[in-house]
Image (cartoon, rainbow, N blue to C red):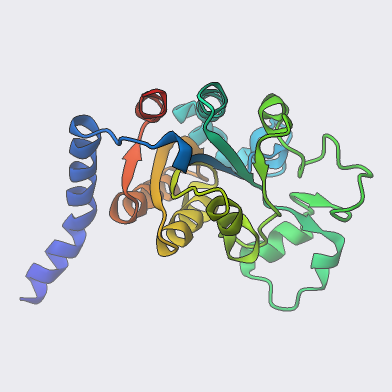
Length: 240
């Protein structure tokens, strides 16, 4: 009995992955555009620009998936179809250095001043910094219509206003991509699902620190979300 249970646990990721792939191919989601948002987590320089402090960790996965182009394609499609676009950045400020209970990765990011700005109300040295939005995405983000929520501080949106901003607009479905697949994307997926949203994760519009982290994220995406899509599938659904 014990061996059978272990075999089932080991097989679960493959089972869910195969089921998800079949679902995507045969039943692409029908999206109500008025109730749907494209959400991108952490589209910032430290993750996406070649001199970013975290880019080296993600570089191989970003290049393999074509992530930077795919995120822009999702943004562009949302704008062209009048679908809400939301971005949820990760930003640390000088005052966050006083935390006494920072998690392991949080403390490392604070110490290396990744995704850092002096203060949220201080524009000094922010433009073009690691915490600033990736330049290619700024025309979509700074058009006066994109929902730019308050920065989250760990991995999910529990510490910011994302859920409120989406619900206040009648949005109940999210097409999700961004950084980092096994951390902020995963945590946003879980929090939104827990709050009653439908969540479709775009698996080639994310980035992870290595193949193992990406595979771990895919297992969770397939088991928890409402669907795992490619950018091509997501764009097709948004264009319907």
